[in-house]
Length: 211
Image 1 (tube, rainbow, N blue to C red):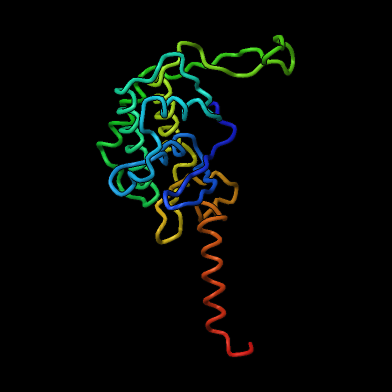
Image 2 (image 1 turned 90 degrees about the horizontal axis):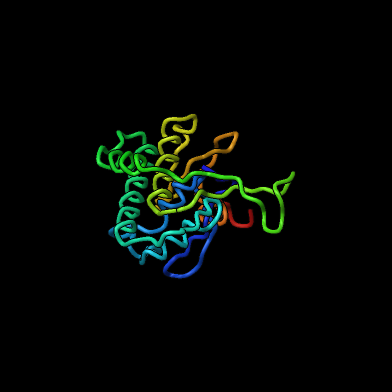
């Protein structure tokens, strides 16, 4: 996975937005929408929406073959599977078999293949190369790459670092790759600050008058 930086801006249908870094591209992808009560957060309405999401850094997989409706459906199934497995792992529950099968099935397809390419206007010299993907670049390949990243997370040293935001009413899930492993919140600017504000108000309410 060619991912030096993760995270996306999430938008609340009721207004407002914030930066959320799930710690892995596959987990960022799991937060692009959902089913049931999470349908209001849907961002992948059309096949082109999926292509646009995959083309953004750090994956930067620009489709050379248009995304199909079937691939969009497969992407949403994989997204739900990653979401379900991530929450199960964070809660230390058994991973749902159906979701695991969906991830394994997506990972079985050929993944994106990296290649060195010259930077615009540069030659293959020191500092003049960057990483790209061997064409043709298809959505199915990108989904395989995301599924493989999820498998690597669940089977690697970060497997015990899956967390759900500590806020009682926030379902966002992430993998904590920080050295101390003490991350609690989806984002300090959101749930972290809300917690600090509630704690401050609670302290003020228990202080004697004039204290």
